[in-house]
Length: 640
Image (cartoon, rainbow, N blue to C red; front, side, top):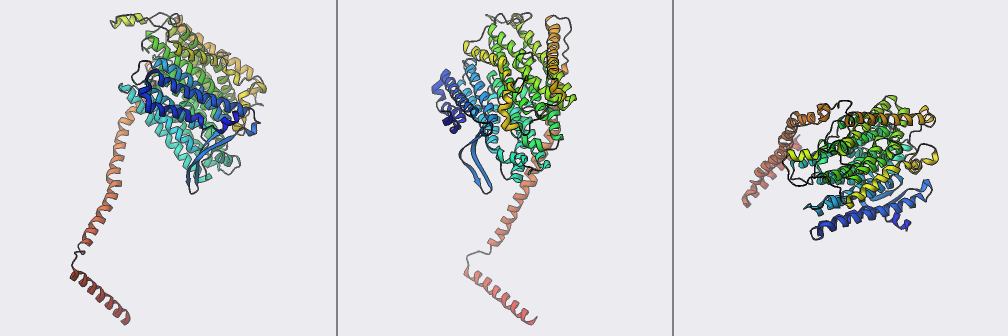
């Protein structure tokens, strides 16, 4: 059966697409909760097929873990031959596993979270459509199929973020996400044009083989890599295009978990890893740019997260920071470490987002952490699972985040000591702000009664635990956050499963540090990582639990260093004038030239038309004049 499923890989994305189409047609008739269960079963089906394909590839020798499934010829236009084809290899199946697996858990969670929403079926239509687009992105055999999914997740993110569009903030957040991603998409499109012009194909195998065999010039490889990185900055929320992700918290919490933890935001990391041979042959300063931007994003977002009071905004900036870690790994040549952290991040960040949604649900839609506190007694399952996610992201052993983050820092230390220091400081801040969040939400004084009294509320506003269908995904994700680090342990080559699994994809371009000081002293660096996490946790406890140190939360950090506000002023001021100027040029110069040409042709034609009056004598006169002119020309020619 495993061979059957790898030949029918197309079922993996088609099942969610089928679910979306059924809900589109029969959604109102299905209603709640049938639409949610249908969407969930479609995603679960995709997950089961993906698991089957995974075991099929695992049973093969490493060099044979690569199969292309062509559905049909998509663009047979001259030299541009593009197939609608899917690629099953270790990287694409790794991505598909956690997209469909975690996506299934989020679908089940959403059945409980979205209970009572009047647009319940439509929400699951968008969720299924999003999963379909994300699967096309990661399973695509060529850049154009990937770009189809790339644009699909961009459109679906707009629908999902602005799902509650009657709130102006949600509508604005959706538009910001859409526009910001379009800026990044320009880079991906230009990279495709350049790759086709130089290599003659959009197939990943063709482009990467050209890089591997030296037929792709370093300057071209550098241009392609950096243009793709521009697109990655948009989708994966790196400076300067991170703006959309914090505002995207306006969407329902399942959207936050699906888009900002496990799927869409990781697509940039996936694309850079898929094109790693191109990055490998580019100029050495290109990976350094990626590493520096990743480090800067990680540190910047971590400093902002320490002063946020919205429970989801803390996690949003945390996501930006962790994505920065992944790009720091990409720029350091540590592709396996980047994918490792991507997988573990999907586990614990999806857990944290769903946990925050459980808190919001139990707190009657309250998101301000200053109005929470002491929830661990009233919401025990949510509290325990959320704490497991906190320990994982804070880098506490043996939880998953410790192993993946440490592997990144190990490679970064060998590659650039300055960036290693930035990574360590970011890890310290991560442990600090996540501990702050846990204390403010689950410990300390209960503040919800005071808030209810201040607003003159009546009735019972005591927080409550979420229903079982919302808690089950939390328990599963908590288990994955605890044991996920076993995918790639640093003790020996036998414990590096993920490295061996991904070797056919990244072996040629993976950085090797096995002979460096960093690798030989990895246990010392592991110890440093433990100390850093401990310091961050202890500092947060001293500030927010023991109150021995006054909290330092500058307004400028709460406002994200005024970056968003400054960008808004630029776009609304000089940017608006520039856009109006471009529109004027388009209307009066470009359109004016086209319309002017048409006006001249119409005027000349009108004058010529006057000679076509329908009178025979007029035509005879014209013919006579013509004959006279011809005779005169022949006579003059003979005389000359």
